Length: 345
View (tube, rainbow, N blue to C red):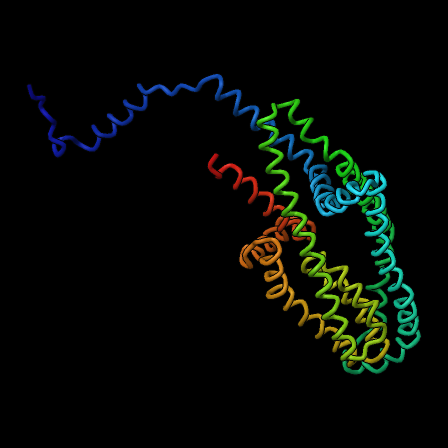
C-alpha cells in the first residue's frame, strides 16, 4: 500500500508558513518540576557566591599560603615539634626575613631622599631651561594631592587588616588540615571524601610548586638587578635589589614600584644615573615577562609559556593586580579539577 506524496513545487510559500506555525502551536513543551527547582538553586548559588566573592578570595589566598608552609610544618611535626609551635615558627622565619629585608632598605632610602631633597632645587634649575617648567602651575597641581592623605591612610589600614585576616585563616588551615578528611567523610561518605582529598592534595602540591617558582623568580630578579646596580655604580645596590626581588611577587606593576626608590637614588647622584636605572628596569621587566616567568613556570609548575602569559593578561584585565598575582594559581586549580573529572575511574 502506497501513500501519495505531495508535490512540493505546487505548495506555495504561504502554505509552508502556515504549516510551520501550526506545528509550533500544537507542539507542547513540558518542563518538569525538578528542572525548575534545579535552575532556581543554581541561580541562587551563583548569586550567593557573587555576594561572598571577597571572602572566597581571602580564603583562596590563605589556602595558597597554607600549601606553601604545610610541608615544612609536617616535617617539623614528625620531629616531635607541636604543630601549633611549628606553624608559629614558620611565620616568624618567613615574615622575619621579609621584615629584615625591608628594614635594611628604609634607612638607605631615607638618607638618599634627604640628599635628593637638599639638591633638588639645583637640579630643577639645571633642567628648567630644557623642560620649560612653570613652578607656579606645578605647585598648583601638587597642592590638591594633600587632600588624598586621608584616603591613603584608610586604604593602608584596610590592607593591614586584610593581611592579618589572611594570615589568621592560613594559620588555622595549617592546624586543621589533618581533620579535613574526617570532616568530609562525615558529610559525604568515605569514598567521596577520599576522591575529593586526592584532588585537594594535588592542588596543594601544584600551589606549593608555584610558591617555589615565585621564590626562584624573586631571587633571579634580585640578583639581576643587583648586578645591574653594581655595573651602573648605583649607591645602596643591595637594599634596592632586595626591594626589586620582593616586589617581583606583583606582576607588571611590581617592577614599577620597586623602580621608584632606585630612580630617587639615581637622581640624588645625577640625571644620567637616574636614566640608566630606568633603562635597567625596562630591560629586566621585558626579560621577566617574555623569558624568565614563562621558563620558570614551565619547569616548576608545568604550564606552557603561552598559557602563563595568557593567564597573566586575563587575570590583570579582570581583577587588576590581584588578578595578575592569582592568575597562575587559579589556572592550576582549574586544571586539577578538570583532570579529576576527565580521568578514567
